[in-house]
Length: 439
Figure 1 (cartoon, helix red, strand yellow):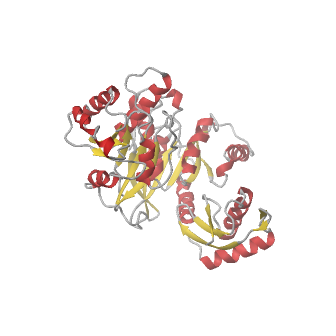
Figure 2 (tube, one colour):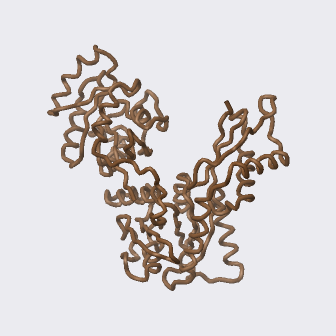
Figure 3 (spheres, rainbow, N blue to C red):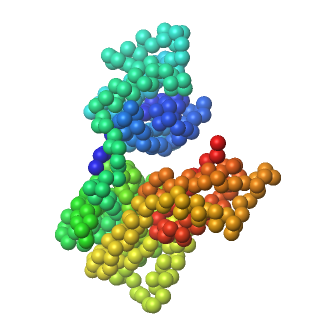
């Protein structure tokens, strides 16, 4: 299992960090406007540069001395990115020249055991190159003049940064790899207790004090002949309740765990019910296309009748409408009630998560679906679906070639997804459709 290196881009506001982020990523993922502070939170994307895979982080502007609340928060976000990164691109502005803030940021970075690459942006011509000599006042041997907007100098810098990175694994879904199961949720919902129950031993510290688990802990296990990797994560708190730097780092690790897992077990406390924070955690997994199983823990502490499970399930599905396909199971990590049944669900979910449909089967379904419910007209023209094909798994992803991409309404997209779910038994996992114009 390959752990990707992490590169963070840091610097003052409005030096072109998001432009460089988009240039390296090869896609416009970060918002780019000519206004300081446009990026406030950390922005992540997975990249491959000349066969080297890594995760790239765009950060908000780093103002080392400002006491303004929003700038303080942006500085905290940047510090988190620096903690997480294996390599740092410190970006400065070649048009403005070296500033006192640049010098202070450089001083703070020198105190960290990180690979730091100094880059001067907006060097678009000879008149800007004349200003570069002053950057040697930072006491550095090398910096990289570049233009993020035009791509000048970026290749040279990225070659140096990535030269020691491992080559990207061509097949990330190797059959010999274990199925990675992340156990995520708020603090103190019983994540470590559930892992210990499944493993049959005290592998992780289970403590009623929230925040006992600081890092993601991997535990291999074999169940019914299948290899799994259980990943217990630190609890994800609301941003407003995160204060300690170490706890902030734990949240970062939990989010990274969601990124690298195959299936996320989202633990909910039966005594508290589904909370706003649970919904946000589920949303993080859903946005990343992860298959999810909702695990309601501490079910032994609930006074129940014949309708309790139905009512609780209905409430979850109502609040998590965006992932109402995810199965729900009620367990007790303390007593072991229904805990072994989790793996039967995991097997069923994982099979669907990796299922492929032939192009012939898919297009036969689409033809029947369009006859049953014709495509709406767009710009006073009848729309057409030329053909469709499955292009990926984890999650199952389908590309539809259509006459007018903008004319494909989300309600019809939902109709097509439901038809695919029903016809090919994708009832437990997310399904993704991409519309492309037929050329």
